[in-house]
Image (tube, rainbow, N blue to C red; front, side):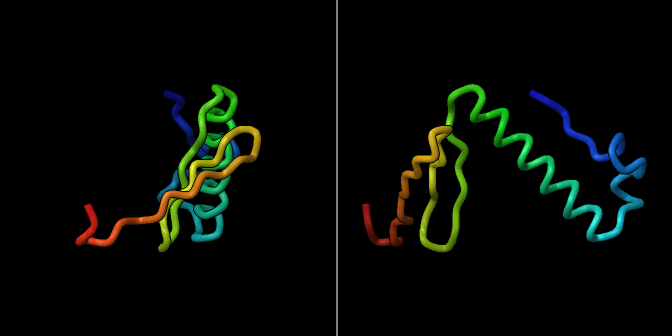
Length: 72
C-alpha cells in the first residue's frame, strides 16, 4: 500500500495547512489512489445518496442502488 503525504509538495504538515491547502492535498491523494487502482485493472467505488458506482478503467460505471431496510 502506498503512503501519501502532502508535505513534499507543500512543505507543510497537515496540521499547519489552511482548509484550501488541505482540500487540494486530499483531492490530489484521491486522484493518485484512483489512478493506481485503475493501473492494476480494478474499479474504484464511489457513492451518493442513491447508491454506489463501480468506475472501471475503461470508463464504464456500474450502479448498485441502496436497498431499503425491509428488502432482502
